Length: 105
Image (cartoon, rainbow, N blue to C red; front, side, top):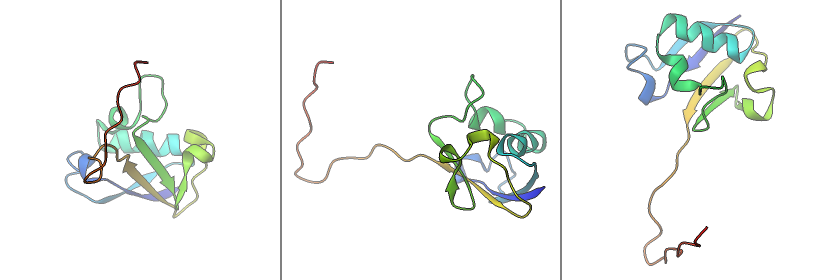
């Protein structure tokens, strides 16, 4: 199966600057393996040491978060679009907002 994979800015050094690349596979895991074969270093950026997606990496197949489907076993249909989206966290509180005191946990 051939799919188009949208690559976030942080990973484009691995794809020669390409915003989107083709990949093959019938599951998310197979697509990740193909991405690694074409763009070495991709797997270590997407996967943790246990073989799961890193918690700060979100993967969508046609707007569906694979974590709410079958994860890496999610089937990928011909022509699907896979998006790799880094999680966004942090920032600062709104102006005038009070910071919570540490709970001591």
